[in-house]
Length: 430
Image 1: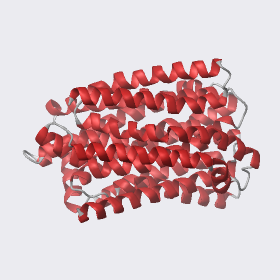
Image 2: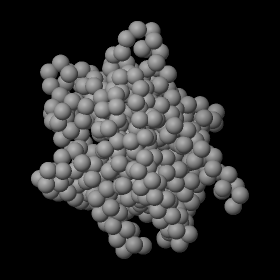
Image 3: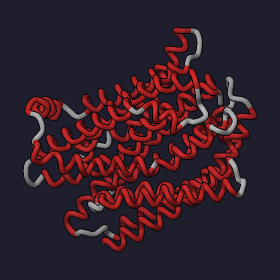
């Protein structure tokens, strides 16, 4: 028990450092670019690759862990070959698709950004898809280390990305003597490269040797496609899962300049807090839940107590933070070109976003439980229902002239309904 507590504290500390460095990344963007159109261009370009890098990270690792655990009883090296090649092939597919569809992404995600601004968005977006590819290539390595109960550097991935982003952006601005939003794209690419490099180093000499042999010998065609298909289901579900946020972004680009930037600053804080709680939980408990399901086909009651306890804590943290959102935004962002007016707009959105923190964390955790229970076939229907709920709620809120407040409120409502759907499905299946 003491070892578990020490491991939990260490993991939480690593993820918390990621939250802190993520805050500094946002502070730097606010300092250099405020809520200008430039930063909105970067937000849209970076958004989808970043969503896949972060959201797919948790889901992919949870999907790969049972494969590796099953390999412990048969051929672990063969299991590693399977997860590495399946992840690599899907990463290539995701990123090539992202690169080839950047024009359509720009048109859908940012209908209000036109002309030269849209062309710059497309260029930066392609750079950010490179970051996504490098990050996705690190995921099988993270899964291998997770099964060995090595939380480093998986729990530190966010701090590595944010830290290298910070350093690269500062260096580029200092050398050039001016701010160019293209620098943020280059910083994102360097961050992805750092994540992959550190995972390759941390996995150890034996597994690095195994990786070389795995790539030299190639994939086993007869076994890889079922896993690629399964991972593809996770990918498609994540597209649907995050479509609500993409809709928010598209609507915001048609409001005045600065609205999208403020919305994204609020999202950054909300998701950072949600990820530090949800990721910590999954890194610590996903392997244990996987083994419990393998032996008894059900989740022990103590794990359910932990899941509900963590989600309850997240809910009250969100409520508490919503009361101090103005002070928090001012403290974190209001410097450089980020003005008091920017603070007012961002805090207004964030106070409403944070009310949905508890349900958001619960969805993150329950989604991984669903995957560990091998119920991934339900990911797409649930994600589709979530998108439908989000669209309906947002439509009525906008029709009721809630405006920007309606965009923020719709998050908590849609996440709460999604929690209910997931709980019903998991309970019925177990």
